[in-house]
Length: 221
Image 1 (tube, helix red, strand yellow):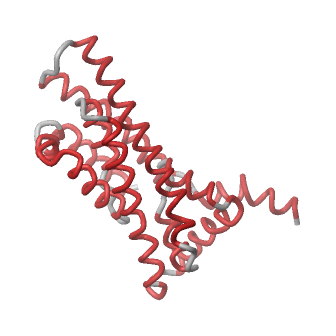
Image 2: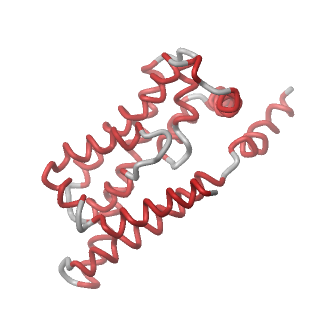
């Protein structure tokens, strides 16, 4: 619970200060900056870096949504495979508790195949709990990478084009961009992201497996 509160506070502070600081810095590097921050954000296993918030906000600010989608999708796909490499080369450092959680994720993966990878990449599901065991099991890289990049690119497209649409609506309602409107955008998007983060951290993925996958296997057996 304490970790959840800390993460939420970090996100809120970053969001409120966002358009006053990091956004201008990122805009200097444009889509290369988005690509880089998406790699870093997707690589972050312990403390999540909200690169999705950045893509959404830059979409609102009017950057080309197609280029944002490509940069964010490629960057986050590359970053996600830090978990794959961690599992591939670091089997011995994984704790027993983590192995148990990964076992549930892998059973979901075995049941649904590439669809599981696509959904984990598309949604706020904990990707690393899937990609680490994929590396441990020496799952073929190309089989994992294709659905991953499709999922991440789809996610970034939703964020970028959704941000553009939201920005257009705000412009029609409030007129040209102002510091006050930018602050409002930051607060609204931060609140939305907080809800996503809380859902990620609160869901018991073992119970999800038992409810939606385990029951089917029992019936089949």
